[in-house]
Structure formats: structure tokens, C-alpha cells
Image (cartoon, rainbow over all chains, first blue to last red; front, side, top):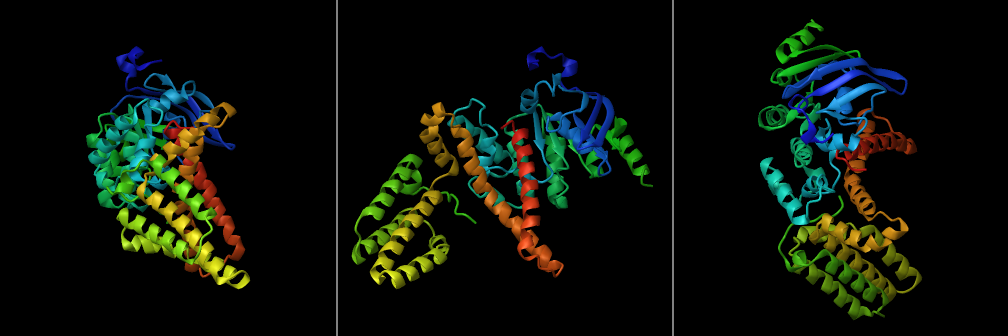
Length: 237
Length: 197
């Protein structure tokens, strides 16, 4: 289904229907059903609770063993390529996400196959690097950047494609407080598109509109972020 | 760390990647086939130094490039001097140093994306035989990107051994391989997430 055919209700709707995921004989998610359309969505839960698997379902990095996943009206299993065009994914470790030798080349890679000519790609890359304070590092070896700069690069490489939804899987886990705050501010305050943030940073989770709490592969709560984070904290009280 | 592009506006930076690659191939051919003597190989090496000067490559970078060749230079020079002649050692070691330094200069003055663009154009005629030029150039870029990653994995394994005061010996390959394979999985996911592959 093309974006022009979507109803307003579908334009930000993330829908899971009876989704189960079984990986190597382990049940990671069990009969998960939810509908969320908030602009900023936090996903919290203990390690191994299934929150990263949920995030990966949205970009078709993981396929549901059963059930259906729809992102903005697109059936992710039936149209993985279309879903990936709409959904940008930021990994917790930028080292795993940087694929090209230099900063500018890594951002440009995301526009490969976009139909833009070289001049247009160079313009988009420069704009994006300027926006995230990486312009002076454009020709630097990506691997030589600091941890915070690498995560900014990983984010820039996703955002240059202007996805409709950004899914960030623990984007601040490996960062110091300053860099974590900067990445958090970009994800919460600056991005025009919908974001799903998987995080252990409960301060960041509270800044979202809605939070989803995962526990042992099931959704335990979907509600206002403060209420869900309070309920998550009570699990360890 | 492998030599990478250094931004600049020298004449060598401004030349197109295709011209530089063709020139490198031609010079390498001439250097290899011309019957050099003591003087001519000296002139060739002087030409390499001039090319670095023309590209405004800092002296420290030039000497770092040269230092990276120390093992091959030493082996080649010693073996040729002992088993052939000192002249053969000078001429042939000079040839190798000149060609490798010029190749290094190419990567210092040319963006990887531009080099890959030339490679894609060169491989384009092979599409009819099933060669995917984009995949080949992408694979080469990925290999270059992964060199420092694997080096950092090796450093992590070395530090872990030191921290625990153990020596794995040849078994060090096992954790390194596991880390490399895990990283390969992550790279596969990252490619998929960007809609590539």
C-alpha cells in the first residue's frame, strides 16, 4: 500500500496482532498485540524481555513466527523493502552500523539507489552533516570518531533518508551523560518524524508520550510514559 | 591504519580518479618494464617525492607511509643483495617502493567513493556475464572499513589476556573469530536496515 492510499489513522499507527517470535527454539515474544500511534514511544523492560526484538520487527530485521506487524499501514512481512524505506533503524553500537571508510561516504551510502544524482547526494550529505555538527569530519575516517560522534553519524546516516519512523535500539547505552543527552534531545525534541526508543534510560523514557513495558516476551503495559515507567520501577522495588 | 583520503585542493586532489588510476597503472608498467640503472631508479624515487610535495602531503604522513614498507623493503633488499647483486637490490626495491608509495598517494588524494565509481564503470561491461559491479565495489569498501574494526577486536582480545594474566597462544584465533563473525552478523543487519542487500 502506498503512503497516498493510507488513511490518517494509519499514518502513524504501529500495529501488532498476536505476534510471536521464536528464535533458535527460544520463544522471544508471545502473542503480542498492540496499537500505538503516539509521536514519541519509549520501550522499556529488563534484559531479554523482548523489547529489542519488538524494535527489530518494525524494520523486518526479525520476522514474526506468527501474527502480523503493520507499520503505518504497511505489512512488514509482505513488503519488507517498502517497510525499510519508511523505517530507519539506529543500533546501540554505532561500530556495527558504520559501513563505509569515511564519514561522508557512510552517509552517502544510505542514499544509494535513491535515484538522486551525485550532486544531489553530495548536497543532502553536506546538509545532514552540517545539521548534526559533523561537517568538519566529512572526510575523516569514520572509525576514528569519538563514541558520541559515531552515534551521531549512525543517526545522520539514518536521517538522511528522511524515514517516516526512526527506531532506536538503546541508542544511548554506550554514551557518556553529555552525549546521551544530546542524542536524547535529537530523538525527542528535534526529529519531525515518529520515533520508537528502546532504552534503559528511564529519564529518556519519561520524556516520551507513551511507553510500552515488555516483560518475559509479553506486553505488560502500554500507557502514558510516566505511568509505565513508574510501574516498571515498582517491579524492582 | 590504512591510508585514507586527506582533503586538499592540490592539483592531484583535483584530478579525476579515473585519470589518476590510469596514470598509476601506466607509471607502474613503465617502472616495472624499463631497464633501470642506479641513476634512473633514483630519478623515479625523486619523482615520487615530488608527487607527494605537489599533493601537499605533510612530511609526517609521507614518512609514515614509507615506514609501513620497512619489512618488505628490508627483506627484498637483503635477499636481492645477497643472492643477486647490490644493484639488483637497489633497482628492484626502488621499483617496489616507488609503485607502492604512488598507490598510497592515490588513496591519500582520492575519495574512496570516487575510486569505487571508477571501479563500477570498469566492471560495467562485465554485467552481461553476471558480474554485479555495485556489489563488488561495496564489498571492497566494506573490507577497507572493517580493517580497523578487526584490529580493535584483536587489541581487545590482547588486553583481555593481559588483564587476566593469561596467554592463549594460537587459540587467540577463536575469540577473535567469534567477535569477527558476530560483527559480520551486525553488519548484515545494518545493511538490511538501510535497505541494501
